[in-house]
Amino acid sequence: MTTLTESPTTTTADPVLSVHDVRIRSQVDDREIVKGVSFELTPGKVVGIVGESGSGKTLTCRAVLGILPPHFEVSAGAIHVAGEDITALTPARLTAMRGSTISAVFQDPASYLNPSIQVGAQIAEVIRVKKGLKRRAARQRAIELLTAVHLRDPELVYGQYTYELSGGMLQRVLIAAAIAADPQVLIADEATTALDVTVQAEILDLLADLRDNAGLALVVVSHDLAVVAQLCDEVLVMREGEVVEQGPTDRVLYQPEHEYTRLLISEHEQYGLEKFLSREGR
Amino acid sequence: MTVLEVTDLDVHYGLRRQRRQALSGASLTVGPGEVVGLIGETGSGKSTLARAVLGLVRPTAGRIVIDGEDVTGYRSRQWRTLRRRGVIQYVFQDPLRSLDPDVTIADSLMEPLLLQGVPREEATAKARTYLARVRLDEELLARLPGELSGGQRQRVAVARALITEPKLVILDEPVSALDAANRVQVLEILKDLRDTGIALVFISHDLGSVAGIADRIAVLYQGELVEVGSARDIVAAPQHPYTRLLISSAPTLRTASAGRAEREALRALLNA
Image (cartoon, rainbow over all chains, first blue to last red; front, side):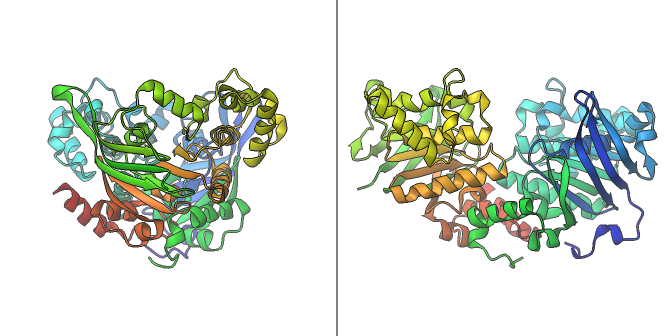
C-alpha cells in the first residue's frame, strides 16, 4: 500500500470524482437525509465510507451515479465526475457516462443479472452498447474481462447462467461487467457483504489489483470498518446522514476523534481477532 | 460433567443417488459455562451440527449426549419433552422469526414457563427479572415485537432463551443482523452469562465477530471439524490450512493486505 499519512486531496492529479458538500433531501417528508458529504478521488486512490444501514452511505453513492430513488433529490452541493457537473447533465448524457466513466457493483450480484441469459452474453451486451464492438469482438472482450477478474475457465463461465455460479463468482461477473467500458471510478457498495470471509478477501484482492493495474479509483462502502481499512487511503464515517469523522485511514484507525468511530474500533479490539493480534504487525 | 458431548457424528441428506454427506465424524464437547464458537462458511455443516443437537435432523451415525442424557435415538415426542424442560435453548439470527408478532413481549417471555406449569404470578415475576438481565426496560413488557428495535428484539429473544434456566444455549449468528451499538450490547450481555454457568455455542460464518468472546473455537470445513482449540491458539497459531486461510482472510483493523501471497498458497493447497 502507498503512504497513508498523506491525504489524497493534497495530490496534484486532477480528481476523477469530486463530491462537495452534497445534501440529499426526501421530498416526501421534506427531511434532509444526507447532511453534507465531501471527498475527492484521484486515479488509483480509494475512499471508504463506513456506516450502518440508514446512515446515508448508499444514497450518497446513488447521487454520484445519478440514480437516486424517486422522491429523493440532491438539494445542495456539487458532484463532478471527470470534471463534469453531473447535476447539470441531461438524462441521456448521464446514461452515457455510467459504465464508461463511473460504474458500480452492489451487495446482491444475482439481482443485477438476468437469470435466463448467459452471464457472458450480458457482459458482451454492455461492451456492444458502450464500446460499439461487433458481436464476435464483444464476446472476445467479455472473455478477456472474465479472465481479468480471475475466474477459472472463463470460456465455460461465459456460457453459464446465474444459478450455476456461486455468490463470489457472480460478484466477479458483475465486476467484469462494471469495468467493461473502462471506467475511471468504480463504486463498490457493500460488494462483499453477502460473501463468505475467504471469498470476500479474494474480491478485495481483485479490487486492489484493478486499482494497481488499471489505475481505477474506488469508492468502497461497507458497514465494517475493517473491510474499508484493507483498501482505503481515506475514510469517511457516516452516522444518521452526517459525516462524523473523515481523514486518512491510519489517522482514523489510530487516533479516532469521534465516539462512534471509537465504538467501531473497540468492538473489533474486544470481540474480534484483534484481541489476539498486535495492532502494529502489518 | 459436560453439557454437550457429540461423538463421531455423521449426517446425510437426500436419498440414494442424491445422498450427500453434510457432516462427517464430528466430535465436540462443551463444558458448563463454556463459550464455544462454531465457525464455518456456507455449506460447511455448522447449521447441520446445530440442528442435530436440537433434534431437528437425525444423525446417520455417532452419539449426542446432552447434560448426561443420551439423546441419539430419541423420537420426536422425547425431543419435545426435552425441549419443554428447557435444558437446551436456541436463539435465531432474526428475532422476528422467533417472536410471535401478535403476542406481547410479556406473554412471549412467559410462554415457556407456563408450558412447564409454572404459576402465572411466578412467571410474570421471572419475565421482569430476565428482561432486566438483558438490560431492557420493564415498560416493553406490554409491547408487541413490531414496536421494538432489532437490537431490543434480539435481547428479548435472549431473555426468552434464558428464562427456563438452560444448561446450553445455541445462538445462530446472534449479532450479524444488528448495528454496531446493539452488537456490542448483546455481546456484553452474553459475556456476563459466563459466570452463571450457562454454556453458549455461537454459530457464525464470521470468526472475527465472535473470536473475542469465545473460550474455544471449532472450525468446520466441508462437513468436517478440521480444528478445535482455544480462541487464542486458533487466531494466533492456526494449524489446518483452512483455518490459516480463514484467519488471513478475516479483515482486521490492521491496514494492508499483507497475507495475500499466503492466502493464494493456502487456496492452492486446499484445492489440490
